[in-house]
Image (cartoon, rainbow, N blue to C red; front, side, top):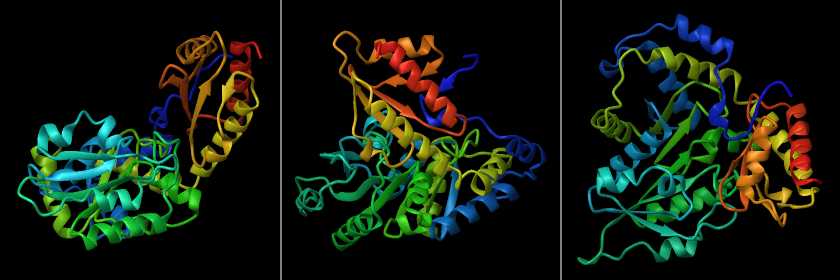
Length: 346
């Protein structure tokens, strides 16, 4: 093999030629003054796609989630979220460190959901000893649960519970586009009950940088203040907003290809001795699998694959994660299966 097959993440995607042209030609202005026409167009498009009143462009998904939490919660308030949520595991505790927001974690079920009764049971009573329950956070698709898709009816139910108890609902939708394609539904349907949602352009959509947060006009006004406070106010940001617009136009529908490749990868891996996974749980572009080989663990398999120019990250002593993306073809999946078989002597 003369090139590298990179299955570490869909964040490794590179901008398309159309994106590069759009970036070169983008009309720009000072976004902090609200004067960048390309950013304004992107924010209006995102708000419409998500069925919200307004949206704000941010540099990263981590910042998008953080400004969402800070916009909903005051210092000392509590947010309820899963123990496998990206916000909880992979964002450096920013909500607590920066905003003084207390995380209350619940058991994440294998399909990425939280039990509705457990959510209800963990909303604090009005008591001077307790923090105020202010926010519930969901993740769709759910990274640590293998890219599982949250059913719209479930999100609706969580939203109804939150609003009945005076809380707000935020959806970390870094891969919401994948969920929408997998369900063949508009993304607005998936977040109809959410008070805020973050989405990413730089994963499966291939843009070089950028995320957005959407919600009500009032929420986005506060989110812009939080963005500025965190150093996320940008000037001629239309340069990369242009790539995000191309991503929305050209890259969403093709996510179905990534899902097909992920299912192929999962089915083939499951047939290899020394590998264990349930292919029926693979719904989008993320495949977690376990190594049961007696003498090879996940780091060793990862290293052996890297020597064959296939990059897959271990996530635990016996577990790896492979993420199909724009640069991974069906042939690449077949070559990856051959490399795994060779590494395991299968």
